[in-house]
Length: 538
Image 1: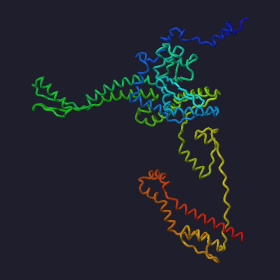
Image 2 (image 1 turned 120 degrees about the vertical axis):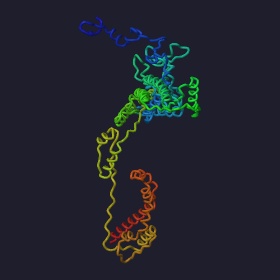
Image 3 (image 1 turned 180 degrees about the vertical axis):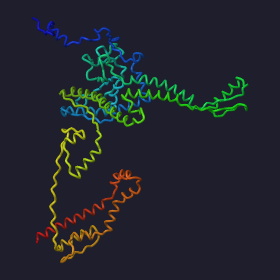
Image 4 (image 1 turned 90 degrees about the vertical axis):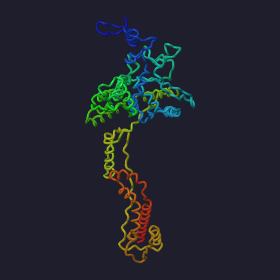
């Protein structure tokens, strides 16, 4: 009995038929009713605009010259180009990581700027797909890419199996570049934007800009005619009722010349009147028409018009919030294209040189805006009050995963031993010790100090403190705070003073007062040691 399965109580399917059906594709263009693979096995681009015009994608390149299309394409690309990128080693070894890093440095050194490659990798968003060719070279015993460049889309087509083909002069069928039958390996990288079985050419955002740009250009021509016709005053000439046709033609010619020369002559019984157009309703129609075309272009490229236009009065906050959210989502989606390009390149590098199957990845680094107010508040709580935050709090408020950071323990600082209280009785210093104190004090103040060896009214610390001249301290403080006082006098507001104060700090002369304080603290420390020695002797 044949082996097989009952797919239902009354139907038995042999096992060999099951295998054949599972491993083969049945619904293909070749056998489908109405399926068409095109001439020479080329699948035509199903784009409706290109089909009606009978042209290729070169017609879309001209749209980038439009003053709305070009800047919006650059704006959307900058959402991804502004990101910083890094090579993540992951599970790959050091050798794989070093090879991929060397490849990036090599490409950057051969006039292949990484930012330019990233910009080219974003073109499938607007044109459906992009083809990149990689040129390799043997460097220090390793195959590394020395050039990667996007090639014109007009050179390529897709066949009935949705494989990419390169059209050549001598081969009408084209050279297969992708799929199992590809004639070249590790050479061409294909990026597609939302490809489908019916449309391997991908979705083209710029195709939705074709008619708005076309209509806008036509509307601009009529708008220019309207402005020229009704934007300037009309010159109306009057002649007597019995004037001949030739006289009227002559006056019209003189008035036409007057528009450029502002000089005219005429008979004594004629008159000239300037009539200005007072209504603007017609002009508003043209302006709204052009704005409507620009909004359609914005929606096609940025998927919204909030980022470029304010639709209604009072909607500014909602428009800005919505634009930031939508552009953030676009940035997260668009970065997949350069990631796919470089990850495929890294895979080839590892396969050609190592063969470990462990690949580094090309990842974006997005510098998220930290909540500045929250960070400043937490800094005050931790520094001034001593609040300790948990890992859960930091993870929830700063969007940092708990496994990515550790809270280090504060370094324990051993407190200084307490300074013994000075004896009530006046401190008796030996002559040698007394001379040291006198020399140090004379060094910092220039004022001589006399200490009796037999009897003192004050201890050494009080003597030094009282002996410091007030003028010296006042002079040091004034020199240090002088720039701050000048800034306060010259500032027009407190905000201006606060903003400029941080930049002023490096210019403040604090060296002298710092030296003075250092010397005083040194003498006080020395005096404390003398006091301890004296107590030990007693």
